[in-house]
Image (cartoon, rainbow, N blue to C red; front, side, top):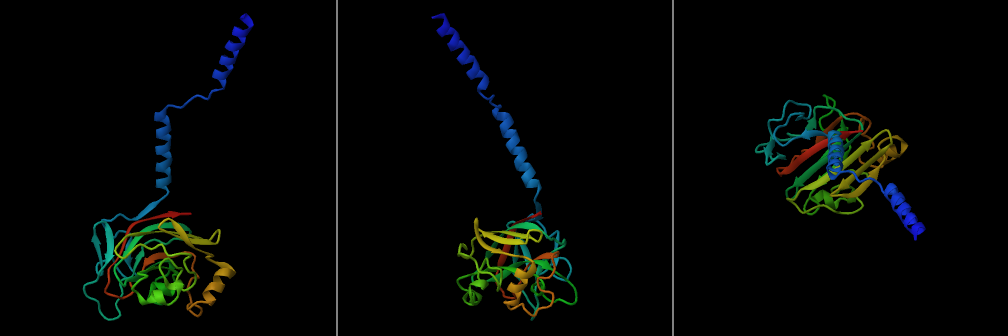
Length: 250
């Protein structure tokens, strides 16, 4: 009987030694909050919903015409437009490798786009002359949606089609997560939590895509690894909105 009691006591002792010590719930919560804060600190807010700080009209001055601030969003809704006038908007800062997070919304029939690697100067009249574009579009009523899948929302315009259509109805907010990494030669678009496009961003594969597109003879198109990020004004009197814009440089 004494041996049995001794064995039982030893078993209980070893079991207690092997059992991992539980961390206080308060410490675990603080650690998770710290990790979340570190992840958020990697992002830089490009638009906080209250001003156009950090943005300007393409090859122009501060944002004064065409764009309005409403309900935490920047809306393109020009009241008056001279013939040929555009209100393309670009970042003050240039970027090379990054992840861009942005929400966008279009009214019926509207057309816009998110561009990168954009160059300014007298040589260029539009950001699309140098900057590749991720299409922003009303896939239902805009004519461009009928010109092939490489012209639909989410496409790398005129080069890579989205794998599926996950765009929300007109008037609702969509979310883009756009990755451009020249070091790994990888680009991608996640639309509303679904990865719909992947593509190279430089080298022979990129050159081949450009050669097979409408941009084949455009000097300077897609050749700059570093440049501004732009939101396009397609020149139509329709509402386009962007909000919750932030960037993580890689």
